[in-house]
Length: 100
Image (cartoon, rainbow, N blue to C red; front, side, top):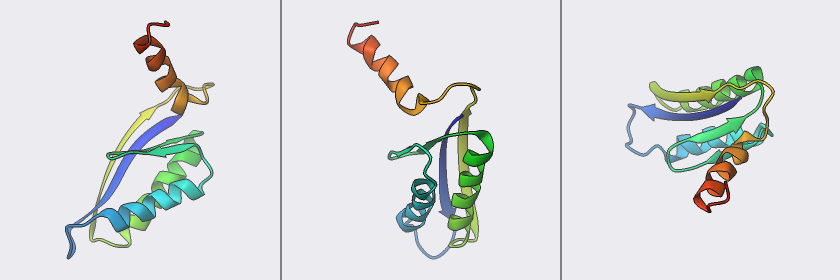
């Protein structure tokens, strides 16, 4: 399972979200699951229960800092497939290079 998610605090006294988002990313990185963070989402790969546990914990960390939380989640559920965090990008890159 490959999940892209974004969790962010809403409300509170500041417009800045970086500190709370950093704590959520820390949860993901400490999980030991394959992951990647970009400007919009954090991607994490693993089995359903372990990925969802990480998303839940990351959301709870952000929730501790704000009265309201936004969570956006997109999942690619493909049993039996692993390594897709990088493999999907590699397949696209091969097409771009004319190798496919």
